[in-house]
Structures are given as structure tokens and as C-alpha cells.
Image 1: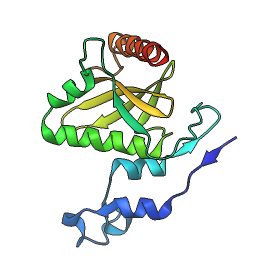
Image 2: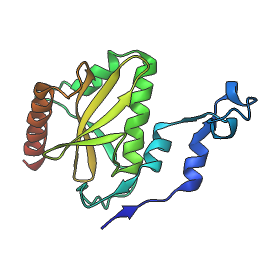
Image 3: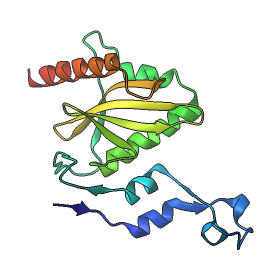
Length: 176
């Protein structure tokens, strides 16, 4: 079974013509001379098709979903602390991507990818590097578990293991 969300007016509002390229027309191979820049929401809306291969959990929650920072037993919020350590423009970009997930869940690639075991990652491209924010969706809420700057192609196993440990601790604490 294939589901597809169509939001063409939404896409067009997020695709903007690059100002420096507006007057160049008629160059071969350039979409009629226009160069387009897309926001994360525009890219996700274009690629927002769900198939039976991608098992997204049904979320009958009203929009937007609440976003909660995981809090350890000692009261630390590791994702919030990680974000505070980043430059303001990178924090803003990561926040915009998390907000997109908050309003549009469930989403797929290129913004969100499953890591298995109910663990998901928000994939954010920063100007000079790549950030990942690992989260779960639990009882109609997005729980931000771990944030990292990628240095290798794959998400490191110790970061994934730490996020799973935090997931289990959060679920255990929310039940009791």
C-alpha cells in the first residue's frame, strides 16, 4: 500500500528563485534559466511518500507534536546543552529541522531516517558539517535523546547505544 501526501501550494511557497540568478535566462540545461533553492520543508514535502517498506508508526496526534528534551536523573538535558554549545546560525538550522518534524511527522528521507528500535534521526546539513539529532516518538510526543556532529559516514554505534539507553530510561520513568 502506498500513501502520498500532496501539497503543491506548500511546495511552491518554499521554493524561491535565487536572486543572483533571476536575470539569467535561456542557458541550456538550467530549467529555463532559473536556479532554485529549497528549504528542508520543501525537500521533505517533495519526497513525502510512504510505502509499505517504510514502517512509520501511525500518529493520530493533533499537530504540532510536543517536543521534549530528555532529562537525566541528575537533571541534565544533554541535547539542550549540546545545542547551546553550537553557533547561533547552526542552532537555528537544527531548530528549523526539528520544527519541521514537529509539524509534519511522520516524515522520511532526506530529513528523517529510521535507525531501528523506534529510534529516529533528524538529518541536518550545516554550512561546513552535518548534525544529527536522535529522537523517539512516545505517547504523541517527540523526545530528543542525543545530538551529535557527524565525523564519519555512519552514525557511530556508541552514539546510537547511548540514545537507546536514554530511550529505555525515559520510557521506564514515564511509566512509573
